[in-house]
Image 1 (cartoon, helix red, strand yellow):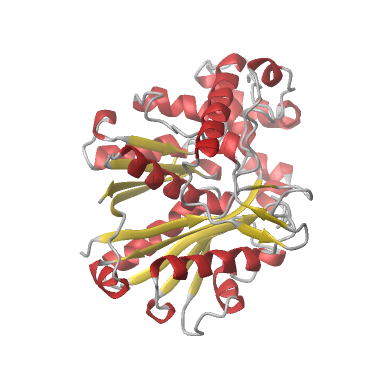
Image 2: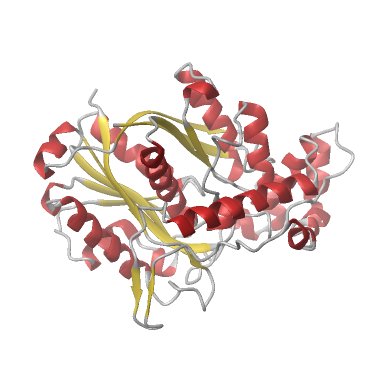
Length: 400
């Protein structure tokens, strides 16, 4: 088996997923072209040596339909012979793209791959693909396919997590993200030109550094109405120890919808010789799991635990954890289940503050982890993300 290396990790800023967002006027094709061009410029990559491009994208409809990986390559003027693949494992799609690209290198199918993701939630809104599993309430209840926020409220109920607990996680995420952004610690960001608004977008837009515990506490529960439509009854029926569901998640302690894209250059040792560049990190191992579908977003914790067990690691053996803030209760579950301290977990904030462009998030998180390992001169890190229906993926890297 070949060793697999990450040579570069770049991403766009995260724009607010609304018409006045900084990236809302940019098409997915244009956003991907910005990153393809930047990757070639940063690495002197010969496009002809790329043997596959794999992108995560959750809502594959409209501008993001028709295999956005291949379509964006053609739009960006890449050689016709470079293949493209678009994958969807919900919010872990970007990490799964990285894992697939890594496996192709590891097994000798390819020497050079590109992985990442794209999600323009202002232009292709979440659920606009009208998937039956989410659009048909009766189907969803019958087959235990619940919305993410409902799963997060169940986790809060099972773990006796209070509204104050989840708001505290959100507040910490905002404070850390604001500090990191203002300090210029997100080195993986590639500025994006928006000619419609005549602006250059160079920083993440979703951060609310002025949020307070008081302002967070004033927000209403976001998922109680879903609970009244049969979700609470189903969850209580299957968890007989619960008398009720605590609806503690709001717009303030849930992931912020965003626009963004990410790319990683992944290859074997031979690629480093071809581009005359040393790799930034080695991919050591990965794990993909599925947990209780009713908890929906618990896969992040289970995937991390599976990966650590696979490599016989304790939290003390890992320098930093970049784990998906798939609602605040999920972060608390990760800490309790895995024994991870605040000092190692999402040290520059998570998607509650920074934004969650679903298919792009995994690649962004990997770049964020690499940036911070290098800034602190640390060695090992784990990235993990939850997807819907309890799915989750985790990847262990070693900085070189």
